[in-house]
Structures are given as C-alpha cells and as structure tokens.
Image (cartoon, rainbow, N blue to C red; front, side, top):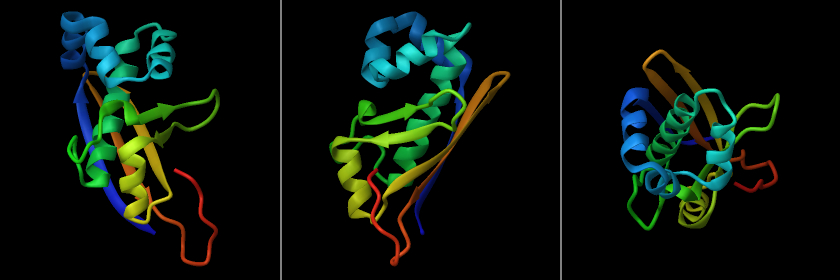
Length: 135
C-alpha cells in the first residue's frame, strides 16, 4: 500500500560547490558517517552524494514533512550493500512520522548521469493481512 511518493532532482555541480565552500561542515550536517565513507570510496564522490541528497529530499516529500516537524537530514540514511539495491533507513522523528502514516518501509531508486542526480522514494505500508516490518 503506497502511503506517500516523492521525487527529487539534484544538480551535481551545485552540490560540488556546496562541498567546496562548506566542506566537512556541510557534509556532517546532511550525511551520516556511513554515507560519507561510502561516497568517498568512489573515484568522484560528488555524484554519489548528490544522489543521496536527492534521496533524502524525495523521502521528505513522501513523508509530507520537508525539514519540519522535528525531522533532520541525518535521520534519513541511504545504505547500499555491494550487489544490492540502495535502501532508505529512517530513524528518530522521521521514523515516527512514517509509522504514524502506516508506512513500514521506503522503496528507493537512485540515478545520476551528466549534471544531475535523481531519486524516487515510495513510502509503503504492509497490506492489512501481512505482518509488520520495521522501517
């Protein structure tokens, strides 16, 4: 059951300028340690950071909150294991809001090419006859 949908497009050059200007201050405000480490293992980490930024924005849209209601960037974490699709892991206030909406998980799709990174997030709940899963 779909409880919310969000999509976002991030301009890679804009994120590159933010990182160049604010460096660690920006990175640590928006991304978790694990996200930063994952992206820094790539030849050019910026497109991967931009995709994660877009994923966070798309998830905030799916939640219907933006950065209001006590939600902050680091409560939304994109994780990706080798050979697996990326997943959005919610914590804190964002997790509580998702649960209040009847959502048990966020389905996530990321892409980056050329000057842009994009993400789509679907906030989904289990069908009434299925067991509950954790977000």
